Length: 215
Image (cartoon, rainbow, N blue to C red):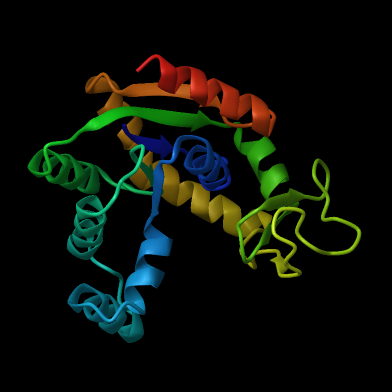
């Protein structure tokens, strides 16, 4: 089962993807993680990624699709979770073509719906473990008193420099301009469903499970 988690920055896509990996044996494909992994891999594709990133240029859609193609050749376990990709209609078309070439397809696209003001309040209070990705919130899930991650024990819990109101509004604007058209795109394909992205983490996970069990 291949799925897309769709939603603005901070909607909880990464958190829910990690739960699906643990519970269903799915493979999470995050663009950022793939690029970092490729950069140090020593493969031909990895050398292309390193050259582009070192030059300060943006990595092309062609390269990202190439990285996804490589991942699809490996063990995809219980299916693929596309987290943060596609971001544009052109990328969505390219992904559709690639999946067709690999004789597979998307099962569903889950839109994690949020209220912008509530999202800003959530993200400006957010910290993340640099080692395992566990997310903390000043109001709802504070960092443990000993400063160590409750999931992996790391003391590398940090707050992103761009997790502030002005930066987040800029990122939201980019999402609405570039990525939100995908909502209509996947609705037209009969693939779109939605969950409340601002519900409690366990409630969101339960709702996603319900959606996937009925696909």
